[in-house]
Length: 430
Ligand code: ADP
Image (cartoon, rainbow, N blue to C red; front, side, top):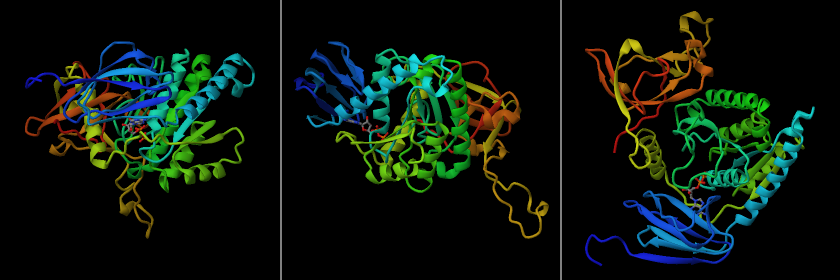
């Protein structure tokens, strides 16, 4: 081929119940299409013949139940066909959940509130077990059948719904687009601010509880989403504090199905811990051999990419807006840290302790450069802790002499609130 011409094409034939696993090249995107047969990407059916473009670095699989042929550019990092997958066991779980949703729907309006509640599924396991992937599949299969299940993402490490450092929930009304991901219409988002819970586990628990309470209220007034239930994705942190937080999430969301991916020990620990709760099923599922391990470098790049995507869009299709504000127009806080009271105010011998839920005002200085701040929905300062957030801004300049702060926001216009939350989330434009 001539220099500069487009990459060679190839066709891949997939037998029934096999999948084509692909890692897109780091430097270029990948175009492919379903030539014939039927196939799905993590639970979402591929459109016949339409070309799809996958961004650099993306890792995914095209699975077929009945056989398919894929036409694709021959420029991936890797691609290979696997005929051993755990998809049958996953779709069997889906079938059980469907049954429970139908029963819940049939009981809508019953005096017994439990009967009208669809399955509350929580997916747990170590990092890179395929948790978010399984969550997406279960959601997409349910949406394909007309349900509107709620996706809850408690994984502050990556963020499938919004930015890392947040926990969030959103109804899934259509199978999830394999390229675009989850539509960001009106997600319910709480800002934790860090990508590991160890920084402030109490705050993490409070936010999880806050989110669960809001969803509970929404379900109470909406029989449709109540019957559809939820799928909850969790962190890969499963030891020590991580395990405690899993139990806390199971309890707080009143999960009825716990899907444990790829770890026997965790499964038996959870079975043991939950045996007093007959309404909770703990189910062990095999991890897919296709799940790709991502090292911490890759994760950091992925987090960075996620932030870029928030402001600029997946393919640079958004135009974020730069604004300037006076220091006095904004009130920036961080949550937790700092002594609760000065040592002089404490009884003799008592040590000042950090209050994890304290709202600490932040002085504006050059240290804020490159930080990503969350914009609270709070109208008053005392609402900040329990408020969800509207979105994010990125600090691009601090002018100390003129007391001006320059920031990037997804859209022009005034911020919905002057209350901003700071964590350790930063972004460097690359
Ligand atoms: P976890 O949520 O447990 O950390 P993910 O579900 O995010 O794991 O999976 C890790 C990576 O592996 C993701 O990039 C995902 O797209 C990819 N992946 C998952 N399953 C497959 C598969 N069957 N084939 C190829 N890639 C996969």
